[in-house]
Image (cartoon, rainbow, N blue to C red; front, side, top):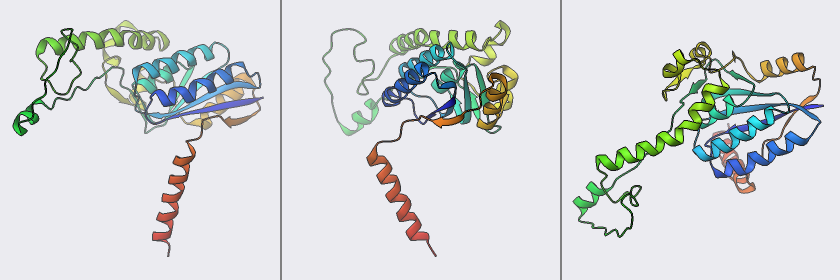
Length: 242
């Protein structure tokens, strides 16, 4: 018997989704893994990838206990993943929450006008160039984008309310895009305990009578990343050695 540990560290994107989902599928069918710890330190990222991973974690939690440990940041999409677990721990210095969706739409129109650069855009569809940085958006376009974000946010919002049992009187104070300290997150019901991986392990072993080792199944970075990190580390050691 063993407990699987899966790390979600850094920005959540397609690459992370393609690396994490197969591991979750593997752990789900392997009987030797009695429980799972998902270690999180992430500001979130892609709404689509966050949702895909969160749904897979929810599916896994129906088969075996899954606990989240937030160390540093568990915000936005990564909090969605944490909330999909049966129990959430967060270190005393962590921040949690940020239940919301944001879309940043840069516009270079003013700068281009000053530089005398003109861009001609041909389009079919009133809002086809909504995401283009070469046009200035009017209030109607911004309101249209906001309505789209509201639709995208609905699934995230409903999941947090359902999974964390957020009462009606607390919804506006929790589901508002704000981030909270772990202490405040505990008061609001966003996490279950202030603690670390050791605390999660102790709980799992005592409650479910699991005596196996912890195996880290997190995917390793690509070879080139490991090589460059090693080279940089060696260079720094050489420079600062006595």
